[in-house]
Length: 528
Image 1: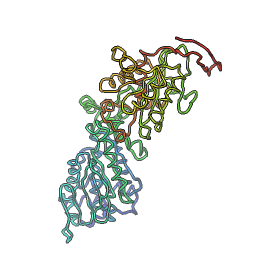
Image 2: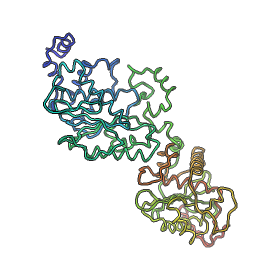
Image 3: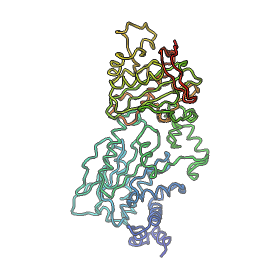
Image 4: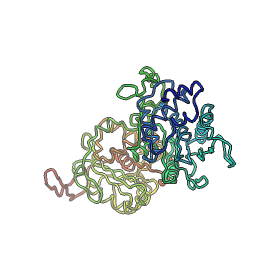
């Protein structure tokens, strides 16, 4: 009897269950193509209600990679597909297929995790309902047959008579020590673990990442992880997964090169209607957060920025343009604790060229705040003892205390606020980043970049601007230990850009200028 004859006989109610089960059963001896074909036939035969249109080309790739993770040939599959691409439905059908037809029962403990526990519980419920549908129960009665062993069957967890446990959990909960009898979870299915609410908090993002990694690294040795997601933001954990597992990632937009990727389900006219109604069409449907509503700095403007190699580097201080005594310079400094978490940074800008340009940058994650003051002095002397603006927040107090002992030309906040500059002992030294000054300085920098008023020079600085999002601008999380995304060069650059109104020409006597283009030295000049 051919496959078609067997399936037609089953639809007529005349097929033997043993024949039907034999058509779809699989083990490790079958090839990937054979198992995928059996899944596609099984899902359509038993659950044709889910297939209103023909499959898209990318569905075959989804099925193949789901199987690769299930069989252990790939450790991870990041399925970043547009809303409505059926990635969740296919995952449910695939797991139901494996529970019913894998004669080896490779995975004894399957866990699904979501940001909202109710979503994970619904996934378990849907999977359970697939397995107790009348036709499945008819051909696979052993899945939930009565046994002497006590088993649970709830909306959040069930265990089959064949020894497969499926359980719901939340990515907001710790995952250490999760064991069922003698088994650790060996297949993790992450679904709905990132949304706009999660993206608003760096602390929440980091907590979820830690829990997902704890679950993944705590799996059985033959385990694998499926991540179904939307690529909403370069700020989130989906972006981290894409960067960490590029070879195990499938990014599926609703439209590519102007054509629908699933033409049977989404016509060009339907896509236009979706685009008109969607708040973030680029992130949710094109899977391109780089052009979505989330970005802060215009990507096209950043792509036009010249990326220079430093002309020379002195103890981590990268000089892209040499000092010109007739020019005005200013610098900004973001100050860290020096314990390897975030970095202390410097950005020096030449305000006398057109466009203005970043002349030098510095980054060090281990330098202590007080020692940084001496380093800032060394750097500032290279650029004519220009005005320096260390950030006064947090660790900045230690830097400024030391800097006041050794350097004169320090920015004071009274200059920015337009109030009278007080006596030296009463001045507010350094740049204070707060809810008023942070948006001001970042929006100023954005306008400068978009209007072509500032060349950033340093590729590392440009990369930080590319990664910065509107949610980063709104962040209020102060604990650096909970943050994995640092924009230290960006903050230093934004502060330095504010110095354009306060920078003056060098007032040093006896300064030495090195002109590496002409190989000349100019000494003993007086510039006021």
